[in-house]
Length: 132
Image (cartoon, rainbow, N blue to C red; front, side, top):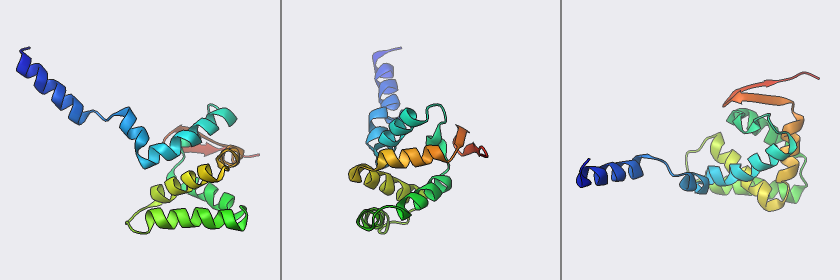
């Protein structure tokens, strides 16, 4: 390959290939990374980061309902602030909730609750729940 072709290939690669660093700085990645770390410590191998957004949201609903009122309002305010100004789905609400859990110091407790659900995932949204 000649020098111009190498340069063009390098530029195209830089434009097309997503950066791991950039992905981890995106709101979803920033919220998920500490959550995944907590899941890996508390229930390794269950891959609960692959729960569907709906299943994760259901777990969050139960968890938020049992938080003290002040913390519950902080989570609700964070979701409202982050998601109300855009047309957003569950990913936005889940991201805002995980960030709020982290700020409030309850992310580890939420991960424990997610682990207690008995879900196990093989791939994204390919999860089963074992019966007690």
